[in-house]
Amino acid sequence: MKYFDIVSKKDEVVGKMTAKLCHADPSLIHRVVHFTLVDPKTKNVLITQRSFDVKFDSGKWCFMGEHVLSGDSYENALKRGVKDELGLEVKKYDELGSNIFSYATQTELVRFFLVNWDGSEIKPNSNEVINIKWLSINELKENKHDYSSMTKYWIETYF
Image (cartoon, rainbow, N blue to C red; front, side, top):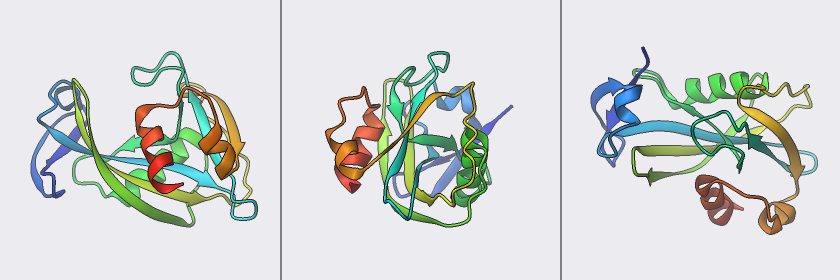
C-alpha cells in the first residue's frame, strides 16, 4: 500500500495517509513532482501523450509526473519518475517552481522540474505514454494539442 505525506500549504508535513484516501479527499494536500526533458543543445522540450488507460488526464498531452511517497524527497521522486516514465537516469535538473492544484477529489502540491536530456535513448513506459514529441518553446506555446490543465499552467507560467 502506498502512503503519502499530508502537507500544509507551506509544504510542512502534518500527517500521513494512503494514496487511495489522498485521491478521494481534496482537503488532504499531498506532494507530487512534475517534469519534462529539455534538450540543452536545441532547447526543445519533450511533451508526452498519456495512455487512454490511465485514470487521470487520459489521452491528454502532458509533462510527466510522480508522487512523492511518505518520507521520500522531491529529488528521489523525480529520479524515480524519470526512470519509470522514460527509462532514463537523471543527471542534471533545475526546479522552476511550485503550485497547489485542487481538483474535485484531490489536492496536490506540485514542484516542476526541467531535466537535461543527455541524448540517451528514451524508452517510454507504454502503460503510461502512447506518444512523445519534441517541441520548441514557440511550438509548445502555439501547439493546439489537448494539454492537461497542469501542463497548461506550467507552459503559461514558465515558458
